[in-house]
Amino acid sequence: MDVLDIALSSITFLSLKEKLLLKTNLDSLDKLAVLSKEDICAFTGRSHVRGIWQPERTVETALKSERLCRSYGIKALCFTDEAYPELLKHIPDSPYMIFYRGSAECLYKDCVSVVGTRRVNAAGAETALKFSRDAVYGGFTVVSGLAEGIDSFAHRGSVSPGMNKSAAAVLPCGVDSVVPASNKALAVEILKNGGCILSEYIPGTPAEKWRYVQRNRVIAALSCATVVVQAPPGSGALITADFALDYNRELVFCSQGLSADEKLFFAPKGRNGRILKTPGDYLRDGAPVIDNFADFIQVMNDPPGSHVCTKKSQMELFDV
Image 1 (cartoon, rainbow, N blue to C red):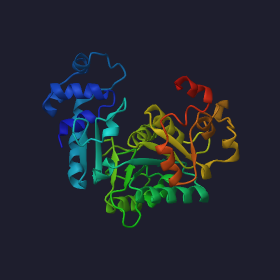
Image 2: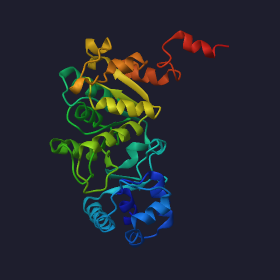
Image 3: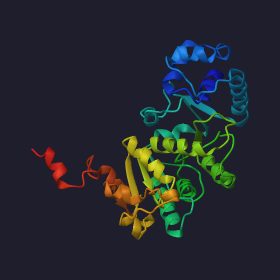
Image 4: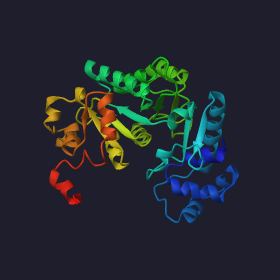
């Protein structure tokens, strides 16, 4: 693992393309350390007005992260590595690096992301558990965020007996720690199962609110489809749903997680009168609703566009 890559990965004001450009022009951490912000602007061809550049701190942090990697057996994949997950490469804002514990082999299988609310009810919990268990027996890796609620039940279902390399948890912090701490035992089970815990953040990075949103894009990007089990209006899981659509992935909702109001496209107001996004918004645009894993497979086998072109007149444009 190159400490220069770790340092580049930690610079938040640079895009993936800019980090790759710097890597081709630098061959050591020492050369990065002597760059001024003006030098970086000259390399990238744009002004980084809001970016705070503290080279000494960047170097110190990268060296500390390298030590954490050695201590915890943390491995990493750079965007330029052949083993970097293919689906993750094909989004506009791919991580420069992903750090992981365990085995990355689970990321090379067909993946399905299972997400939902932290305030889960009994039906949602059972649905997430059963869907994930059936998915791993069907040959999929289940990807989620190791949060409380739906994520936890999805991971529990994905570490089913006899099925290895079938669980991947994406964290909003460095993989030297587990957030929330209450799911440490579950993280251990994922690793014992041959799965992995991964993050785009260098080891030693704490969880912050904005990192949860960024983490959600990785959850959506790693999979061919995102399944929303239970997501009330304004739920963070619907942010993952938006990312899935942005990345041209399938988006599916579980019927057991939908309330009557959500099925009727009820749009409640949140703070300051802001209209909250609901599952109904996606259903109205054609997102399919499933009862179980068998329904999911049917959706995946349907022709592209089947669940978006909900009006027959739209499809008539393609009639011969």
